[in-house]
Image (tube, rainbow, N blue to C red):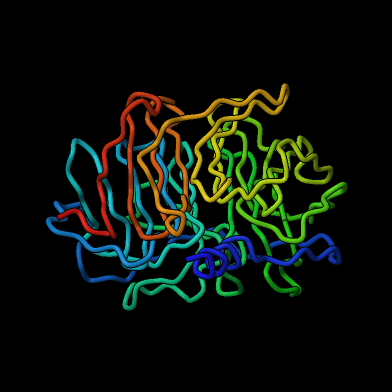
Length: 318
């Protein structure tokens, strides 16, 4: 069991810390494209099976919880699952924003998009996508965005003329990019990024040795937790909701970066080899929370974490 969980953490938080690099400018024009002959609709999904989950969230232009997988989006609302009839892209690094969602990944065959996506955005529930940056040049397993849309982040996994190794950020919707300096960052790896919902300059990162917090786009970092394994995090207003593994137990907590105050949330029992992988809080209703696990279980709460509904088990709804 311990070997399995160590392998998982190596994959989840295994982006090596690289300090070299320089500023970049995206040369990708913003345009939309879709050549699928199938009409786009959102329909009852019936029985579903999700093999891989690459992100979750509550886009501001819908009332559903979105699940991004390797066979397109799955939407959950009013106790029912829905799917799209086309544009079933393999979205990775999925991030919900007020106007829709951003993501990286690979297109569904026959839709006319080039592979890889780079960084794209949809404002119509996935019917079409807008190319923000790095289109046909790079993919990003680690992306992040402010809910308001005024701060974008990606982790470059290899150096190129278009993107630097390490964390790159944009404050102009992907037009230009700079590399975060990560001063005072002493972790041996990089992990998931979360961005404050209204202030794109404020971000946090999960690592194998705790949460690092920044108010200047990651140029200066500060460790705000004990040196614990943190597998997932997201902002809930000014606080951070995060999951840690401590004493072989899966924990869900909140922390206020300005004070360091923490609270514990009660969650259903999770095996040590089934840690939390993604977290989401609905900015329009912070009592609505969801999380996924390594084994593709999905839980949602509508009362701030007091009770939980297991809406997917092993990636299946039935």
